[in-house]
Every structure is written in structure tokens, then in C-alpha cells.
Length: 192
Image 1 (spheres, rainbow, N blue to C red):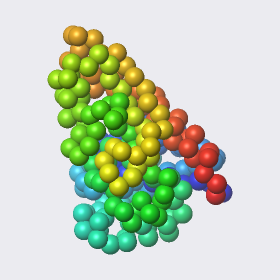
Image 2 (cartoon, one colour):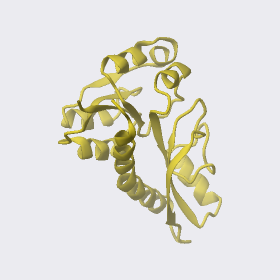
Image 3 (cartoon, one colour):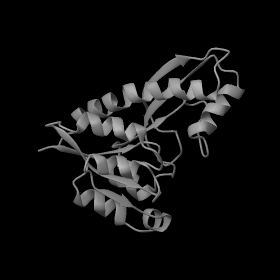
Image 4 (cartoon, rainbow, N blue to C red):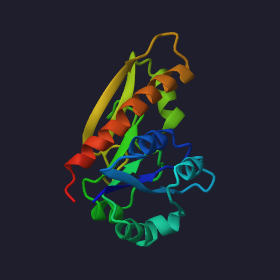
């Protein structure tokens, strides 16, 4: 029986796409659904291109009801992958999927993490701090932003002439290279 992945994303979904590409014709696992809190998120188009079902939800449904947990359990989801998802994960979802929710962060945690630290906010903070290297952190999700146990980190060098776009590009290259591979390795450890 195939292992089933749910992807949560709030925006463009470039990491989601790389994961969809990896599992498109995979005999062991599949992307069962893509969920978003943003009805205008480009990730919805990406999911449609791969013929993957989607679900759009609001804050009330996410935080105050069991709708999302019920949906994921009905779909027999094995792993939840956050790919640019901006909301804090509620306790009931963490309780339903202990150790089975992962996230990618565009910095070397514990630096540059926490509420409001996502996307360009992170890259600007890294630049303003004069860091000589940046990177990515793939981690398990707990009740707090960016504090779950680390799974994998990768670094890139920041040259003194690098602008925001260059730093962002270097980080995305690492994300696209490593996130799908790490998702696949974690799935192999989950017993069905």
C-alpha cells in the first residue's frame, strides 16, 4: 500500500512542485492532497497540473474545528510536509501526527527563526547581520515556530557582493535539491 503525503503551502509552492515531481510516478508513495490557507496561492495551479486534489481552509476551520485532522485521517495520510506554509500548526494536528510533520526553513536554525521569519524576511535578516554563510534547515514541527528537532541542514557561502536575490537563489537551490530527498527518506522510516 502506498504511503500518502499531504503538502501544506501558502504561496507559490516551488518546493511543493519539486516534491510532486519526485513522487509523480512513485510506486511506494504519492501526494494525496495539497492544502492551503490562501485561495490565490500559485501552489493550487501546480497541484492542478499534477492532478492532485486541493483543499482551501480559513483560520477558524484550521484552529477551531477538527475538519483538517478528520480530512487527513480519512485520506490515510502518513506524512505532512510544510512547504512555505505560514501559519503555526495547531495542537490537535500535532497530536494527531506526532513526529510526522516536517518543515523547511530558509536559514540555519536556531538563527533567524520564529514568528514572522519566513521568505524574504529571513533573507534580509541574514544579509543585514552580515553573515558569511546562509543555509536551510529541515526540521520536525512542534507547537512553536521553527523549534522542532532538526533533521538536516545545508549551507551556502554568502559573498560580500551578493544581493537579496542572489541569497534567495542560493537558498532555493539547496531547498529544491534536498527537501524532496529528505521527504523520501523520512517516508521510508514510517511503518504503514
